[in-house]
Length: 170
Image 1 (cartoon, rainbow, N blue to C red):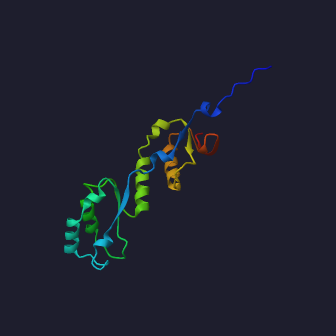
Image 2: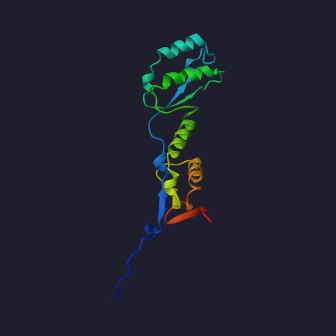
Image 3: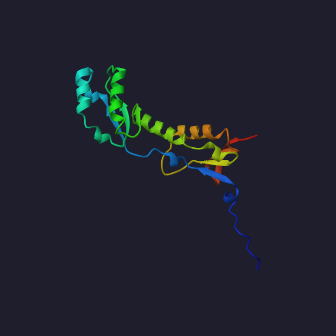
């Protein structure tokens, strides 16, 4: 009886590094601060009333949360009003972004991706993981490619056993 050939894991021997975008997914609770709730008749910003309402507002409910600051009403909001809201939120909140929850999510995701040290991937063969438990938006893959292309030997998309080539250094 002949000896069976040993099973070789070609993926582990390939020198591929897998980068999982899920590692950079925004964490922490998100909330919206809507200026609409502070407008007279939901439409008009009265400075004195607005300032008084913000002063008496319980800002603690935003403690350590990531906040999207917006106005859902079709009202003209002066720049200083957003600045005033920021001055109250900054000491208590986590990340604060002008925009809706989708914008907040995107900005935090991009900030998390910017923490990637591209030089750790210098001259490496990288697979950017394509499937996971959490749906990842397209902008994430584009941003990772933009960050790693200047240093990577090659970039692929998918799983180590089944990749789509994206870039290869000449």
